[in-house]
Amino acid sequence: MAQFVGTVIGTKMDKTAKVLVTRMVLYRKLGKYFNERKVYFAHDENNDCTRGDLVVIKECRKLSKKKAFTVAEIVDKAPKVVDPETGQIHIQDNRE
Image 1 (cartoon, rainbow, N blue to C red):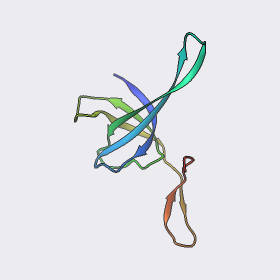
Image 2: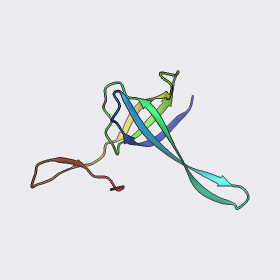
Image 3: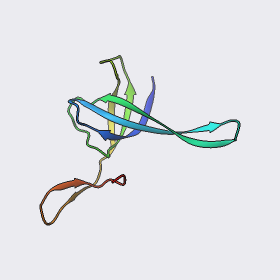
Image 4: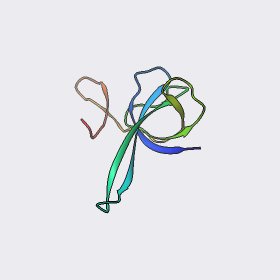
């Protein structure tokens, strides 16, 4: 059974997390390693994941057309920052 570590990039769907998995792949002709990225949809039963979390996903039976993984555990939660002026909670993310 396949198991990957990735970052949650979207949680707008109910009980589903969009997970970006990055792995190093050797390009044989050049002899260099390149990052290969792939997006998986994973089942998140309790909607515990938020954008930016580091999660472990495991392969399972097909749950829908695109979902064939479940969130096994949340390794690291994304840090949250409170705006002092408005009081809104923002997720600290390096992509923004």
